[in-house]
Image (tube, rainbow, N blue to C red; front, side):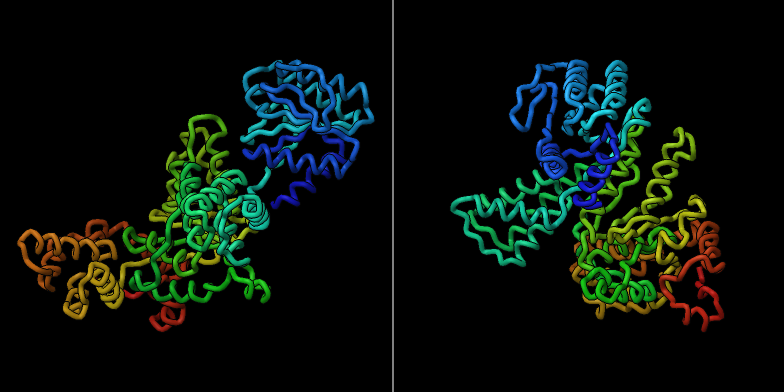
Length: 517
């Protein structure tokens, strides 16, 4: 929901005589500017009266108001003012009032009484709070409205205002450059965006394209503060991921799906994919590759960090993380090992089910262009409804790599470590490493390098890698039964192979190609 929609929603509640509105935001100054506009549009003669524990009651129009230091006094004075002039359509804003209603039942009762009184006047009461939790006693009286973070247009206006009002700044940005700089700040509050822009300006008194990276770095730090989200610099591309031809083809067809051309074509943005399969087959690397391939921000949702000790804290964290992802969109949201969201197994008072349910509902109903990449190793731990269509565009299974894919993976890791693949017998190594997953293929090359380095040799050879492979027990042998169960899941047609297209599987008689392990 954008800022215009929130403004319209508040106007609608005021017209409906809703006496108590809880506005969830950390941006108090921005919220007050919006509410001031709402009250002026609604009635130019109305006042905006704010209260906080330090300043007491203050009028935006400069009216003399009675002193009210404590919350009970403030509620009593507001009732007197509203009842005394019932025709006035003033807005009364209580700042940080959640700190008082949480610990004082008298405050909760008086607030409820006041809401009942205000229904018969033109006045309304708005509580600004950074948390969504509302006391149960106020559930029937209050409506909760969440104020979104600023969008690109709003951040562009903040940037323009800062440039126009800062002396001595050399602006080397074009109009397109200003838009890109504002876009880089998506996910920040208006105040944090202003700080990032100001920091970029005073660094060298020049504003140019180099400052985009500085603003992105500031955003990474803010996202880390959210506790549950981590900003990744997605630098991997398709060449960094061996094999998985069918998955790469599917992603390639959707590479331009978030651009203007796709919108003009009336093409909906893809929702996401689920990557199920054997550990070490490249699920996490695929998520990073998608961000690099599509040139979109990559956010990783840390499922473990969602859980807090206080009642309602976990649900609030997941809602905050998902709102932030929507603000940064278009982006890729990577939910790693999604089955860990249910790790408590119902022994946490239902918190894990509520958190997981919140994520699933959001995935089903989201309209923002957030592409979800969910990875899972243990598909049996997931409820059946998790992988249904509507939440994901496709479910891919990442199997043990074929011999051809093993050659690709070995080539990728040799090149990544500065070795020339043509100097090695890659075909022999691929045969020797039958049943190895990508992570194990990488490790045998690393083991061979340690062996050569310890022996003071200049480089590694094919024989070094072959010896390291012979000393490795792959997962396909140590966990044979588990892997066979996973591969049976693919054979039953529950997912699309990440390596083979439907046509290739049809040519093979609808069977997963057999690997000798």
